[in-house]
Image 1 (cartoon, one colour):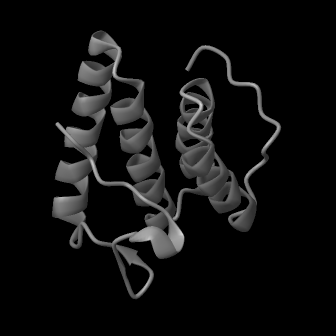
Image 2 (cartoon, helix red, strand yellow):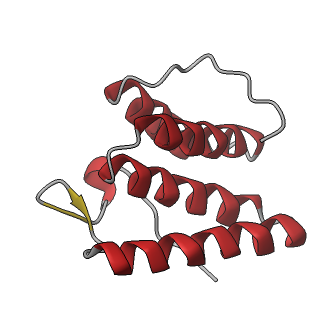
Amino acid sequence: MRLRATSGSQGEESHGGRHAFGLSGETSAAADLLRKSILGATSAGQKDTHAKARLALGDIAHSNGDPATACEHWQIARSLFRELRQSGEHDAVEGRMRRNGCPTDWVLTDF
């Protein structure tokens, strides 16, 4: 499964400030699929897919007015991109975190 989760001018699918998943029922179903993809990606060692799913879940949380959860997902994505040495993706997530007031010096523990 390949997820398309990009930031800002690089193609983020957004419509009028809302995530492209649309209606709340669709958003809920999308979030469920993203969580399942995280489980599969983690089991298969696919950190890139895991990171992109976290990024998308953060976007969903943010669009639903839950900045704390959004920041948590973005932080995990940022850490995974760092591990993968994907500096462009890492920097894009860090920029997103800063724009949305997330702490960028978090150290995550058992989530």
